[in-house]
Amino acid sequence: MKNSKYFSTTNKNHKVGFLLGAAFLATLTCAQAQNVGITLPPPVVVVPAAVIQDDYLYYPNYGVYYNSGRHQYAYLQGDAWVSTPAPRGVSVDVLTASPSVRMDWHDSPAKHHSEMLKRYPRNWKSSDEHQDRK
Image 1 (cartoon, rainbow, N blue to C red):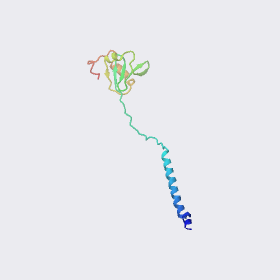
Image 2: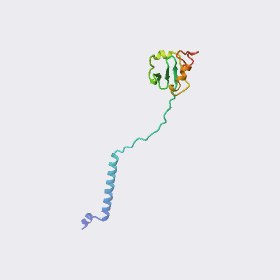
Image 3: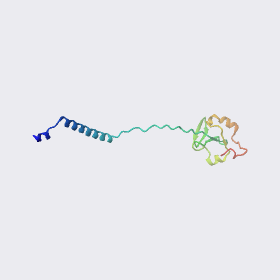
């Protein structure tokens, strides 16, 4: 009869076994959950845009404006304004060797061109040619 005591189970043993099994399953479940990749989108970072102010040099002999911030040449072609990385009909060396005037406005040449034609006609020469260049 003494042997039967060791093989019999009590309610208490069932509870302990159940709790140990549940803990083991919970551990396995957590371990499996860690292997599953959860992808979160990166945070959105808003950076204020830098505002580049347009600065122009005008070459009256050629009717060409150079935007130093954008490295673009602007000129009137027919009835439309064109902006290109190289001036039309003249090399950069010849253009930069000709008289130029630094503009005191920072918007589009189209808004000021008629005034610039009056102030600086095609054959305009500065009293000090190098004064306006930088």
